Image (cartoon, rainbow, N blue to C red):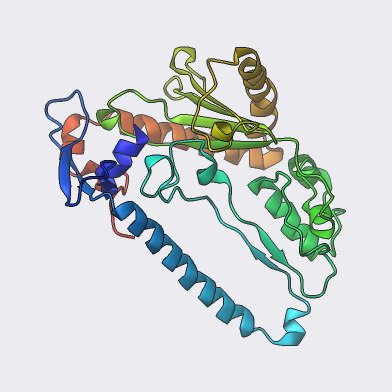
Length: 325
């Protein structure tokens, strides 16, 4: 569903290799009033999309190079350069022209991390790529620890409570043999009006990734809570020991139920309460609950909007979908 919705907002590309001209297809919906259509470009635009993405990345790389070249040598010797991203990009994968939302596919949440330390104080084995798992939640401790001369002794009190279990990425910078995490977690809560959700796809998404497997957990919540509605759960499971598993082309959730249930238990009974929904200490916990309440209230506000809102530009006015950046 998320692919069709993305195409409704930004347009799509046909999967028919014989199509050489643009076309228009009706958006799939059981609602007769939703007589919306999706523009589909010719099949050759899949390659054009990849070419465009490569061109943009080249432009960005050039500008980064200009910035680095402008740093005086004495400043550069006391600088650590960290290059990362907040999310990945489908860029043609799994039938998505572009985007980053609505799935647990590797392209959406496997991002680059490049750390350059000209002084050599924090880095070693610089010609060897690290393949161990790490997470966005480890980045803040990495940056603070670099600013603390490479040590983690700044973690005391509430800071230790919040960040003490984050992975030590400094060790990975120094040695290619330093281990990564045993697992990484992923969470995204998409805001999608029911009016466009033609197959009632669940929009609260969790992921659990290990070195050799991945679980995708999709669910709806009881309104105004984060309580999972069990009947809404949909699962994905990929075994990276196989080619189709590595490419995430074959969902094995129904074929290895024991392995899937084991990962579901870990995700819901261990990682969800102790990490993803862990209560923050002190006044931060108050702000955490206020933010959660605001999010749940906003979701309910969107869910309660009548059809007329969406038929009259609500996607742009309320959600910003399709609006120019």
